[in-house]
Length: 114
Image: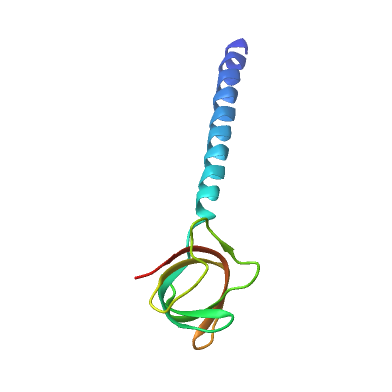
């Protein structure tokens, strides 16, 4: 019996260390994905509240992306949009299926003149 207790204590410590390492690694991955764009493409049209992009992301096609007061722009990202600009945007996650599709911008990651 004494031998099995001796064996279990180091195994518990190793298991606990592995659990902590995996848990901390998962936190780092989530922080990095917070600034990942899910929509990107070139601006085709602009109105008072939204930009129309021809999306080249996983969701392809024309999408009106609504920019609100709650939309955040990363540092050094131009807040003025122009037709032809390449934009990378993180949406709130909901894509409304219509033609063109519609989405709300949570974060503007890039707005670059082409």
